[in-house]
Length: 221
Image (cartoon, rainbow, N blue to C red; front, side, top):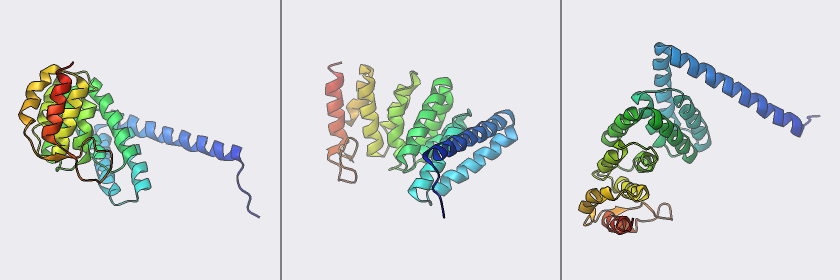
C-alpha cells in the first residue's frame, strides 16, 4: 500500500531541495567568479539555455530562465548584461521580473556595462521584442545621468511600443528637461499598445498622443 508523505515530510523535502539549490548556485557562481575559463564556459551554456527555453513548455522555460537570471546576477560585465537582456526578451513574466531585478542591481554598481548592453540591445533586438518595452522602466530606477540619454535613444527607435514605453518612463521620471526630446514625436501617427489594458487588442493610442499627454503632465511638474 502506497503511503502519501506527511505534510511535515513534504515541507522538509522542500527545505532540502532549496538547500541543495542554494549550495549548487553558490558553488557554480563562486568558481565562475574566480576562474575566467569557467566563467566563459558558463556564459556559453547560459546562452544555449536561453535559446533552448523558447522551445520548451512555459512552466519549464520559466523555471530555467529564472535560475539562469539568478546565476547571472552573481557576475559582472557587459556580456552578463547582454544575457540578462535576452532573458528580459522572453515570454515568461516571472523570468523577466527576475532578469530585470538582476539587471538593475548590476546597473547600480556598474552602470557603464549595463548602458553598453542597452545600446547593443537597441541595435540588435527586433521590433516587437519585449525587452525593448521593459528596459525604459528599468532605467529610470537607476540613479545615473546616463539613463536619460539612453531613454532618448529609445525615443528614436523604429518600434512604436519601445518609443511609447520610453515616453511613459520619462513621465514617471518627472524630469522636465526631457520635454525637448518628446516634442518631435507629437505628430507621430504610429499606433502603440503601451498602456493598453487588454492584451492582444489592437492599439488604441498613437505615439503622438502619448507624447502630447506626456508634455501636458511634465508641464505641471
